[in-house]
Image (cartoon, rainbow over all chains, first blue to last red; front, side, top):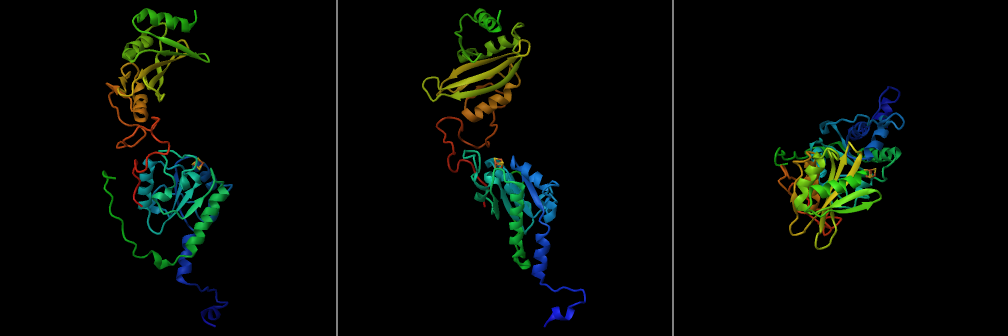
Length: 173
Length: 162
Ligand code: SF4
């Protein structure tokens, strides 16, 4: 056969660059924790020792969007907050993913009323919706694993040449 | 003598020209009077040595959806000395939705009045900083008025572009 046969028993593995890069990406999905209401408590529980999100390589919750891969919107997004969420999403480097945790972030949930955005997919591209009010930590981990499945299918060059965003004016939002 | 009887007696003595209506709900006293007298009455309740309502706990409003006297502005005040809570209410018309501010009496009224302005559009005249509290500055409606739909009006609050 080809290379695999040649390297057999020599301590080497063969793979493709795409698979290797996707594997590396998928194993360290750092979340940006947007814990903006009660769902945040379950998100914190997920990071704690009992559910231990570190098993999936996502224990590094950085409070700066510059170092994050997945935006974890855990809570009720109001119209005023939507601009903040979007601004944080825009600051995350590509490639990036979004989890809408809980029914509030997914659809507005029980808050079918004027100040609450009826689902963050009205202004963000959402990859995974996690159902529940609040979702149990297992459910959030399931959502994270679905993101990992999604990343596994990506090719490294998909994320080349993504155009830069226009710089944002400080005062004009 | 019971504190509520003292309140009635002292108010009648200090403001003979004002009509006070007292109602009682589960032991909580509510005083309704006309809105022109809101500042003197509040000042009196605060400064009277015996009553000493030194604390303004909340100011809000009710939209009764009726004419006349569409709104009531409600003041919740508390006397630390007597451990007694009192509600004051003044009716406000729809076409003239305004009342004098009581920020000169209790400083804590500042944000409560801003909140009431934000939600009901009742103008507190003489307020030092009557800006919106919860809703965005450029929002055009008053969401707790009965004619405002529960789910809002499509497009009244901007979302970021996708
Ligand atoms: S989905 Fe439920 S738990 Fe989560 S933010 Fe909404 S109300 Fe709170």
